[in-house]
Figure 1: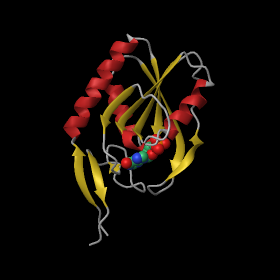
Figure 2: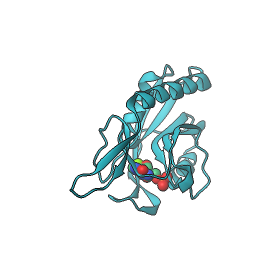
Figure 3: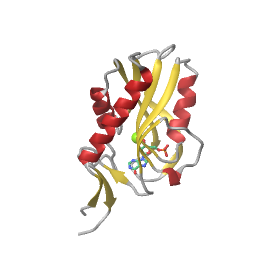
Length: 176
Ligand code: IMP
Ligand code: MG
């Protein structure tokens, strides 16, 4: 079985969007340092490119949560699989995620992280599937709004496959 993958957003489009988001964050934070929380594994590709383009000093930390198994169905709530290394109290925090789908992951994470009393907390996601939203969560920096299709590439996976595609593509599972 081989899957057919159609390009939805090219590498050039993703990179120019990342430049814009980096510039926007730089202008919002005016040189204050940012504690960037990268959500493993999907946000890694996006977050490292974003951080490289930012002029604002960055401290990077990583967290892994799960709401999905190795399939396309949501399980509803999140579980921490890898905790942050550092303390975010009093820090200006930006959480970087690959995609907002139902919104459950980012909403739950935001509530959990706010209890640790950061100075500020913003959310940033490369992709947004607005049609699928099940809860109210405001994402401060969004790259692209996309239709309700399962996408891979640029860090996003389907059962751990296709993360390293240099573009965002739509998977059409196919027998051959
Ligand atoms: P949410 O909690 O429903 O917003 O789910 C967010 C998480 O679901 C993301 O971090 C992804 O891991 C996963 N996800 C949602 N849609 C897709 C997709 O189209 N491709 C790959 N992963 C996805
Ligand atoms: Mg994810």
